[in-house]
Length: 119
Ligand SMILES: [Zn+2]
Image (tube, rainbow, N blue to C red; front, top):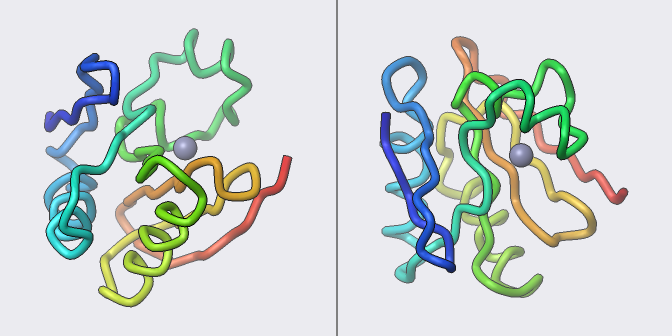
């Protein structure tokens, strides 16, 4: 397990044993970004995932995904572009809700799929 902290100080857990979302993506991303990144959502138990309307196959349930923000859409765009340009080993990179946050996940076979979800 790795962990990160939300803006309000609450700890967010992201599993780092299987596919290394934290060490392979979030750490290099933070280093390149040069500022702290807020992780709003990491691991979600199935009940919480359902409550927030997450997909039943969400990587959040497996602890392999993180929803990140730099605090504004402009900052989020920088994070989104950095994940791509740094060639990090992600499975999915999602520009969510028009850039309110940036979802990134890892999996056994990282597809480097880039998506934009507006709703
Ligand atoms: Zn997410």
